[in-house]
Length: 186
Image (cartoon, rainbow, N blue to C red):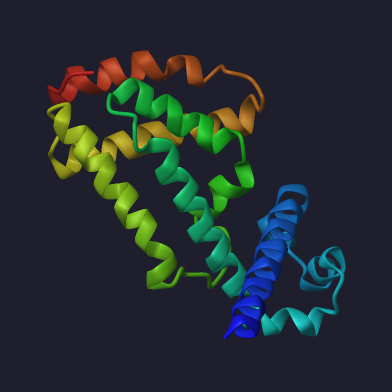
């Protein structure tokens, strides 16, 4: 039993090493630039050996998706008000644009997360809806506008002022306009 536990621990450590290297590569080359050959080289194995840990390239994206949303949930759990929540979302997204693309945009052709990997995103959406409801915002239309507004600001920040705060500074005003229109409280 002890040998099996050690094997399982080594296997999990290797999976983590592969995922860490995959994140490094997508941050340098973009999500679509993830090459299994480069990934294998980075972790010191041959490309076919990766299949002992992940059955396909999309399985690597799937594990990354789950990791990303688990980190997002951790970041957002204690944020309860709209402006700080929008700022925390902006910061989470802009600090790692590759992760933002994987989690919140559909940039990988044919990739759809498994139910297991998708579960943290469902939890994050429920948390966001709870925060909006606490601010008096409950209509589906208002929730759609909120997500479009905040992700739009993130997209602008990443695209037009990476490393800056031009669009982040607009969050308080945007949230004020949003709550004025939909009747919630900031």
